[in-house]
Length: 83
Length: 180
Image 1 (tube, rainbow over the protein chains, first blue to last red):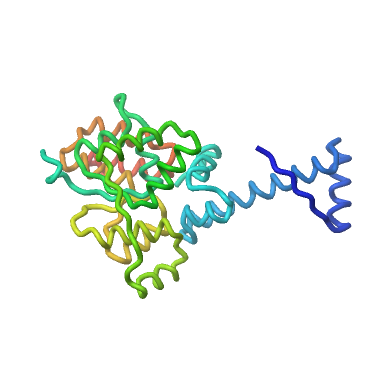
Image 2: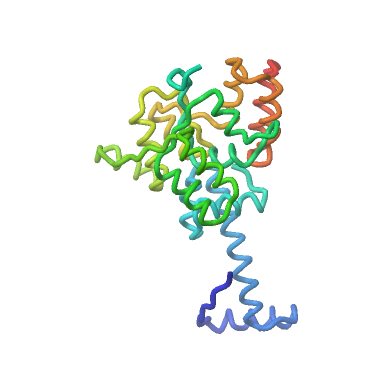
């Protein structure tokens, strides 16, 4: 499932996206999607690290990612991230 | 053994999902546990593991739903009754489902273990003297109490290995074999 979100970015980000798009032969919106995906994955891994150190619970992790408990369980399973 | 004399366990959502997703000897691990123990869950865990699971189309949620409807899994609602307790658990940064689990453990007197895999929740339960155990510890206990065979215990620990850090499983395997 996908959702469309219109956003404004500052010139710095716009230039970065232009470079990325050129290098990877993508459109700027594709480059932005890749960037957001990368950021999301990084956030998930960071939250998992915080979970492992006892800083937050699995439910806290799910809430911060906007996932249900089941969706979080599946996300961890797909990435081979342990309890 | 009648159900009145079976030991009571209170399960959190992650342990419950792991117990139903992995099979040993052709049956979900949950059913092997239910053959020897009574399992209780708070309403919040039912919503997370069963209701959300059914909505998301997870096949194991159907099995959990059946076990709940047949009375094998007992679902119990909890409500906040002690403002100072709620305030303390809020200070730990626990979520609603975590709090419901902790409340149920405080309300039920005769349970043996609170089965939980969540690190922070385990620590908080331990500080409240609410007898937390990781699922691998419960498997060890079933074997050491002779309720399960050593073979069933070993196979179960190996089956759940993908969901746990390696050390949790290797430690339990060494212990049930009497090597640690």
